[in-house]
Image 1 (cartoon, helix red, strand yellow):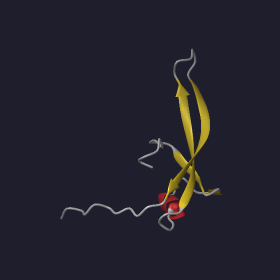
Image 2 (cartoon, rainbow, N blue to C red):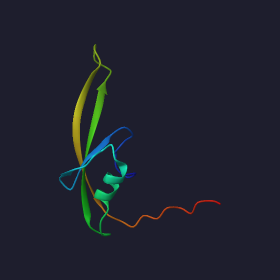
Image 3 (cartoon, helix red, strand yellow):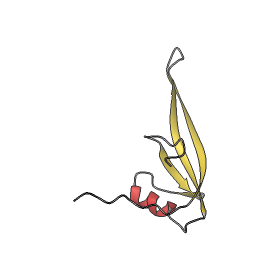
Image 4 (cartoon, one colour):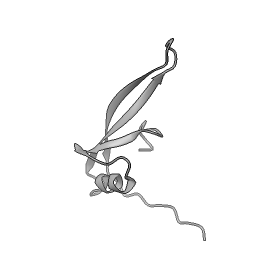
Length: 79
């Protein structure tokens, strides 16, 4: 996700065409996980505000991303 334009406040609503509970980070994480080297499609819901108009308006959109799964290791925590 760091390499995409998925931003703060956007919600992951589907993984590989299956709905996920975007309010449950564990469910989203579990749905995204899979064998290294395989692909996963993630659909994101976002709101885009147009503040240039006379009256601010919001556009609702869904955007799909495809990622290749990789092994991710967390940095060691300092003790």
